[in-house]
Length: 428
Image (tube, rainbow, N blue to C red):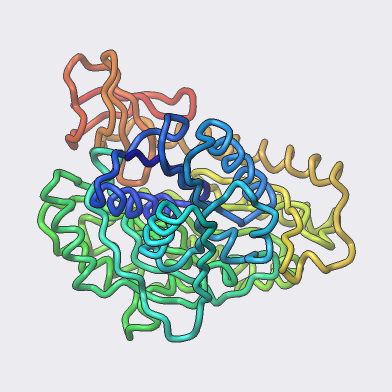
């Protein structure tokens, strides 16, 4: 039998799809590309925005249309956050949530055996543990994404994720190290530690994120360690100094900003001010010689006035980000922000998005050109038609024209210029 998978959303979702592929493969399934003929089609959903829900519905309809006789299964954040939508998703013959991944395989087996529709969404509850899972391979050949944390308890006013993902829980250190040893043995040189609220790693175990990074750094063969998105106010100066002492640590910090205006941040229920965010950025730059600060920033949050937007834009420009994801606020059912009055008009959000995107593009170009003239180690991930591409420690993409296949190697490169959202360089 064959099974195909379609994944929406974050790196955590992608990691979990990898786990599902392994589970189905161990049961004798051949894993094929989504769109190919298969007896089971799995859609792993994201529900951060309404757009994610729409894409999930589209994927379900596509799977049923292209494989009318298949069992179409839906899992992930959308059904976990909104179990009441199950009746509106007739294409999905099996529906599970964002917890109990093994439950999906069991539900599919039951549906295949009986022909019945199976809905099995395990509710999140206080005290639940980290679901044991260990990735054995990835589509990428040099970088492994490793989920070490799940859940969020921050309750930002615009975000449904605490409902979809439940309380904070963390992967035990021993399990993390076992997973990394196996991945290193396969030739993976870089580990990216990811989570739903990564900064809260260890809260349930009496540990901290720094403990996970140190544990990863102790694994022979793992030459680089990178972190996923972080809540800025949970990063201390002591943490930054400790991370700098680890030669494997990559100085790229994705610090989610959301807004550069204090009044907007309060309505978002974020737990820092713009000044506190800038203090953290300066601490990082004082410790790491050539760090990259990346971020997410939202425009058009309910109640955002022209003055608040201008304050946010000015702050954004003052930071000097290496890269930014800009997006307009969209109401999310089940969140406090969706109930707020003073929703910003679509036309105004579009105007503000354009201005913020322009600032982000300018910041990106300035950052890339600031990298030129230096010599840095690059981990090459692809090699095609004489063009080798990879990333520096601070996650600057680099292209090197070279007839040699450099995939999977770390080589010293002199960065000589920038073009098309990347630096170009020459082997030293």
